[in-house]
Image (cartoon, rainbow, N blue to C red; front, side, top):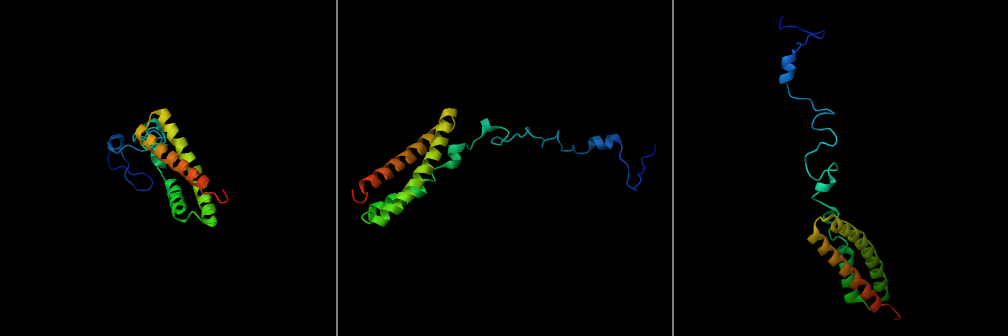
Length: 141
């Protein structure tokens, strides 16, 4: 057989040996197949996820709680400040509850224990202090 065979389009035809030496195709059975990813933390391997819910969620509700506490501290004698702080504080408390649920989930699964406990203590403490200050400074009370 001649190695100079051409197909209909004029391109050189490859032999079976040349195809075997070529790079493997990446298809459904190759490295890009679903369920075969090797990197931890991918959706295919949830147990090896280094970034759990608490680690991703962090302490972002403090962005709502801290200004509410500071405004109450320095301008608490005005009624409009109380109500504006009550709205921001309520949103912060609700956001804290969502993040606390993620922390409890991490604690139950044994992931990021120290981080989950720290976030839970910070957010629970901030929420309770905000509620206590709002009760203490309520107008007409």
